[in-house]
Length: 437
Image 1 (cartoon, rainbow, N blue to C red):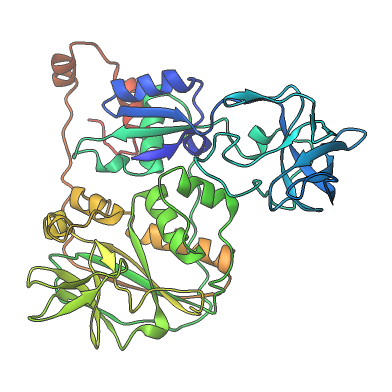
Image 2 (image 1 turned 180 degrees about the vertical axis):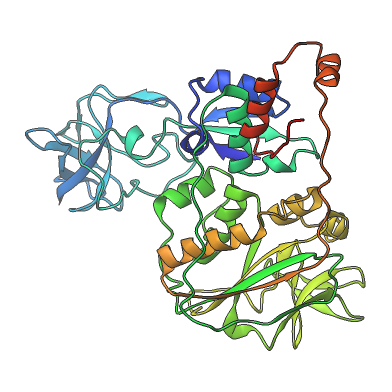
């Protein structure tokens, strides 16, 4: 599980520094396999705007730029980037800046003085390769430190989790543990049910309620699928090892990372009839999102419509019903599939997906509907549209039997004394309900 330290701290901002937080997590059983900075160290790089760009008098591929860096007067900088142009906002390394591997000094380039350097993401050590200057959004504040603007004072944590800690395959789960470990207050976002603006529903029949004890779905119509994914979401996805694809897909992936609940979005216009959750039929095949066509087996749980399988439950969606920039209406799916039904299926097909990884280890079936509401809220916020009523099918969910915790046994096993109030506090911070008698 890879995640951004700054994302975690937005939920539980402990006083521990990065190294101490890493040690505390490891000592609590959440082994930090790796911790690395988002970007290499560098200094004196600011947000800058190119005011003008004129051809260099003695070099065809160079331009002489006037650059606003937030000082009283613009700087003259010679730049060879193909995308350098008037109006562009990009990072600028000032004279005296220390970049990964080199320093910036005042220089003459083909006889023209240059007082700094416009930068690509490669020169800042953010990416291994770059094709031009790093283009920033038009609302970037000229003169602001680029590390602050791009949130580069951040670390990537990678946890090596044991199979029994599926609860920490989400930022919320990790934050809950950090709160209990450090005593810091957690700040989880309140997720309110969406206002239902349309009564359209997609009927769902769960034929295999033992394999899928909970299935929740809803239509969200009249969305703008071409809406750009917000920069904050793209950053959190990328720092968790996922690339941005499109707003709707990004939202489902974001909910998976935030809450640990895998989700899927179907293009509603590509669905035929009602939705069913069943095992595959003899001779049935499915083309997955990765363009591979698989022959389904009788023990493969699938999501299907009237024409056949449209998704491999808990593993990957199908290509024919996938969302695109032309999508107008989506059907959102949030479900609980029992681990034994999903386990081994992805491996058999040579797949490894974030969804199957979580379902194999067990997701929180108490969070299924909450995740649907969160994804709905994000779609309405980013893509617009109207939410339909929720369709929910609930079978025999696993029974959560109460566990008896005796203080004498606790002290005997751990070898240290605990006050009853402290135990109650820790259980509360971990989100457990309890009764004292």
